[in-house]
Image 1 (cartoon, rainbow, N blue to C red):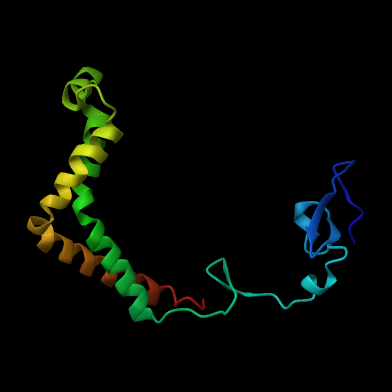
Image 2 (cartoon, rainbow, N blue to C red; image 1 turned 60 degrees about the vertical axis):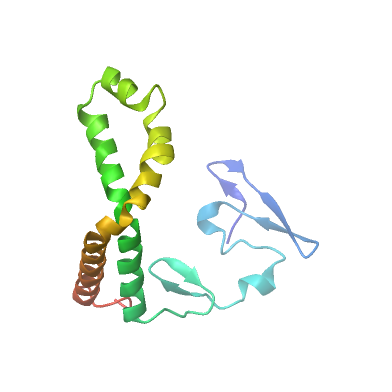
Length: 153
């Protein structure tokens, strides 16, 4: 049971739900300490999928999950050279060189306002790399998930 004490001091939080007050005790035992919300606390627990609560318990098929990983990686491929240039500038360039290159702006502003639009302008040149990255990411996802026993494990 919960006595409302944690560390020698009273920690009660009043939560209003449907115009009825409820008292929730300390966070570690909050599931046991709900006062007038007994209808809510009697609800069956939701099924957990990879630590995320899901109301319906539905999970997309493996092919859908793998294609989402591959598609998102392929779509992000034009950003990879921008990220690489920022890493090089942060690690190896002197502050004077960074200011001269960016014209006094921050690297974030320079990247977002100058490099990213140009990266997507030249994205058709990167299409073969994007396809390769997407297929590799999807295949790696399939291998890792099959090796780990799938989401049920």
